[in-house]
Length: 380
Image 1 (cartoon, rainbow, N blue to C red):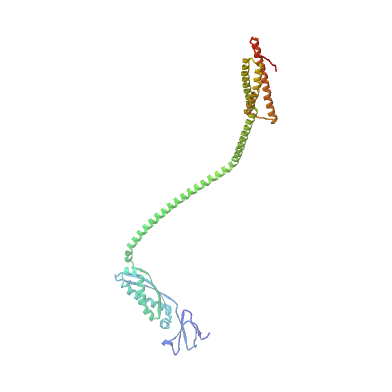
Image 2: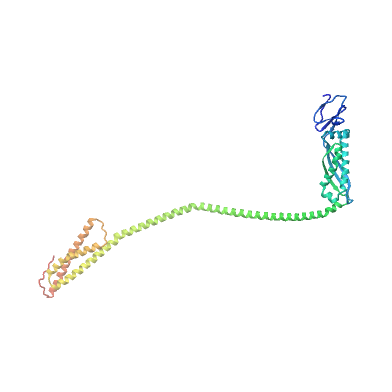
């Protein structure tokens, strides 16, 4: 719009041509906002408030007489206050950047030479920040008088103009650093070799453990497979063993049963027969004794009477013998009757036999002319 001006954010607008100025300034200063300016009667100029950079390269001589080539860079700009803008505008409005950078470089170069001349090379090298701070402090007043402020001052490089002084100073340190570097490098190589050997050992241990685990797993697998393969035959063998065991028990039971049967069928009857024969033999012996006694008395009646009286005792002995015998009766009550009948029949037969034997003895004695008193022979 005609007559209305607005400065950039990094600019200050200078308006000249007015009759009255604020704070004694020769022109009006407008920053950050626009303003109406009467055409033809007022003149508008703009001053940059942006940051500028000036580089310097200065040959300085130390207190030791050693020349040093110092390079530095200065970051500067016009101050934001009205006084700084007025001072800078009066000096740099026509040729802002070149004149501003040139003048700034000259101011810093002079103070840099002065301060380096008061220090030794060793101090400059060790205390570079101190050198930069002293140069900056010494230049502030002059920079403020021309409306400029310094944001930073940095020394970029310092060399001794090929005299070799700085290199000579650095040689012991360089040798020390190289020596320490070699030691550290050797230590690092040793640690690396040690770590590599440790890694190889660990790898070998892991491989051994893996092989052992694989072998163990394979052994367990083979064992399981073998057990699975033998499970059927083992089960069948156990079943066969149980069958054989049961058959053995059955055979033993059958043998015991057969033994009992043999005892009942053979041994017991044989024992009974032997006992019967023993009883008969005892009875015959008794009868013989009685017969002898009767013959001695030559008394048949007495003999018969004795036989009759002895018959119950003989039958009793037979019965007693049968009672003591371990007999097996197969027909119950009928079997008992049969045994008793047999005992009585045997007793009668025994009596008859004794009578016949006594009679025969008496006859034999009669034929021999032996008198017998009261002899009587009975055939029944």
